Length: 400
Image (cartoon, rainbow, N blue to C red):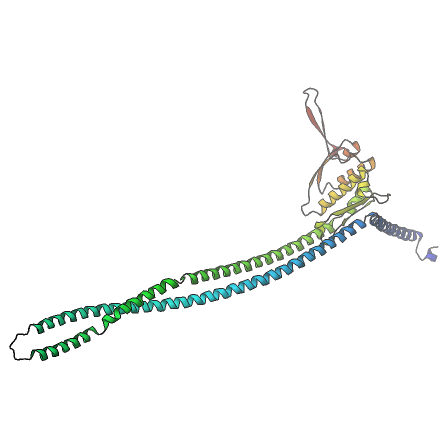
């Protein structure tokens, strides 16, 4: 037989056969687990109400379409408003340019009028000095006339001819000394009065240029602030996108590291449990579906499980989160977690905690001996009959 099957002895044949059967069983077990998981997932998908999310998505699409229409309308209104404001700005700039040009013309006119006024003042001063000269000339002429009138008789000079010549010379001197100034003084006063009236009527706003420059500076500052605000918005948007990427990456890393199925299998003795995201693209905007299927039972929603089955599923999730957490907790306080468990599950949970004593410590409040007989230290609370108060009693079970 050994030669027929190609082995040296029967023990080698049995060892290979046992090894092959073991591998076959393990592979069959893995395939059965995958098949059960696929069936449970299929049942979950069939049971899940897909019409409601579809209606929700349709409503969301309709809302987005209405929002899109409103945004388009608002965009058109903003474009029209922007054009209107641009036209108003152009008109204001044109008006400002015209006012600036008028201000320049008025300023130049005022300067010319001031120059003319100063010129007239100089002419008046000149006229005043001329009037004084005329007055002196008149006084001299009067003295000369008096001298002519007092010529003594019998000098031998013809009185009429001598007087006529003197009077002609006197007239010439007076005309030379007057120089026409008395006739120009009223006209100068009238011109000065007209210039003063024109200055008062024009009355240009000499602060218009500074006001315009101040408005231009304010506009420049507003444009600078707007550009700074836009830059800040872009920077914040980029920072938010980077934070969202980091958050998504960390969430995915932590979510993928959760070994819920492995822990649940240890606690339940071969069951299946897994987590699924309701919105894989943006997981933090939706929920996380937790599914657990006890061994040898068909798939049911988590809310339909019994109290003991829910307890095992919750403990599996708790210990899986602790195992995947960067800050691993080394201490647990568990209050009557075995209240809804049967003896089999109590034994499994107690054995699981006992196997993890190197990873974390735990204080368990329990009333079942099948649970606390696995502990290292047992502490009980009872009434002291002598004092009437409670007292605690501890027992080290590692010695037994």
